[in-house]
Structures are given as C-alpha cells and as structure tokens.
Image (cartoon, rainbow over all chains, first blue to last red; front, side, top):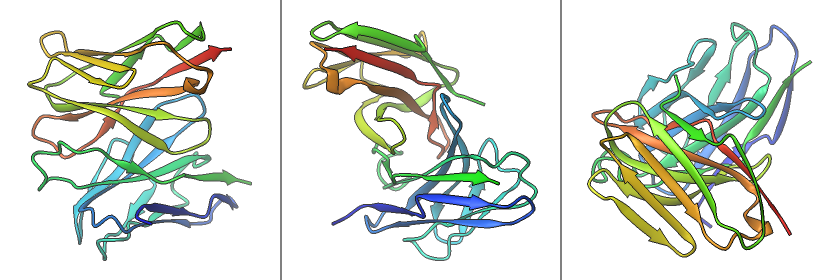
Amino acid sequence: DGGITQSPKYLFRKEGQNVTLSCEQNLNHDAMYWYRQDPGQGLRLIYYSQIVNDFQKGDIAEGYSVSREKKESFPLTVTSAQKNPTAFYLCASSKGRESAFMNTEAFFGQGTRLTVV
Amino acid sequence: SQQGEEDPQALSIQEGENATMNCSYKTSINNLQWYRQNSGRGLVHLILIRSNEREKHSGRLRVTLDTSKKSSSLLITASRAADTASYFCATVPYNTDKLIFGTGTRLQVFP
C-alpha cells in the first residue's frame, strides 16, 4: 500500500530533551512538509523540502530542525529550544515543484501527538 | 502567518441542509485546495481549483474561486452526519513552494 507513515502516534518528552518524529513515504513524492497544529487551530508550516538534501524554513521553524537525506524520509527534531512543543504534528507529501507548478494534492500522515511532561 | 482564514469558525446544521464555508487569502496563488480533518486525524484532500478556474464540482462538493476578491467558498450539499469534521483551505502562494493552510471551519451535522 502506498502512503505516508508517521511514528510514533504518541510521544512524551521531558523538558530539556530533544525528540525526533519520523515521517516516511513510499509515494515517490519529491515534496515533504511538517506542520504543527494546536487544539482548535489551523496548521502552521514548520519546514518543507522540495528535493533531497534541501529544505526551507516555514513560518514557525525556531526550535525545530529537519533533514532530507533520502527522498522517502523527512524526520523532524523538536529541540529543547522549542519553548512550547506540546502539539499535534502532521507530515505531508506531494509531487511537488516538477508537477506543473504545484497543482497537486498533498497526502497526510496520521500525526504524532507530542506532550511535554 | 496564516495565509487563509475560514469563515465561519464553526457551523452547526441539520442533516439534509447545505453547508457553506468561506476562505479568504492574502496573496496571489497558483491554486487553492480544500481538505477535511476528522478529529485527531490527518487531513484528506477534497478538491483543488486552479487560479484560472472559477468553479469546480466533485460529487456533493462545489468550490468557487474569486481571485479578484482573494476568496473561495466550499459548498457541501445535502449534508450527512458523516460530514462532521473540520474543513481547511490551503493555498500555494504564487512563486513559492509552500502549502499554507487557513484556520479552519468546524462543521457539525446533526442527524
């Protein structure tokens, strides 16, 4: 089955720790995205990547880091510098830039709920 | 910053009624998309409308786009209890690779 997989579904972090959220896709998509969603709110863009070994900051990148070493994978690290990391994190992928100026839909994983304890 | 804002923030209707949600955005776009999110889940793509299109249909969904007013609307006809979810618009601002989401409309359809 083709799709996008996020793990783990739930994650608990102690204050001061870094944690890494996994996002893997087997859709052969070039573009991948990370979003943060707070309760009752919309999605805010953290980082995005259009191609392997390249990524750009979104609107709320402070306190987060990413890597794109493989086309299939786009892990997100929530660092201790992120002051309020408790949120629902969503990863998405799409065919991206090469597909007629982004005229394609994004596919989402089921999300990771991160809680700081 | 949010590119889009949905209106209303919340909407409650009876089964069989139509539901209309509006989205306003700030900058020129390549396309506008609508997504649905069931509580605590990922988003599912519903429909995409390109900047040179004015109206698009998919089943019970009808989307309009007015680029002069920087606004879009999503109409769900003959709503069902299963349509209960949050609905988001998303845009790809012109000359960017970003996919930016709005604030969402929470739709409740009562049986």
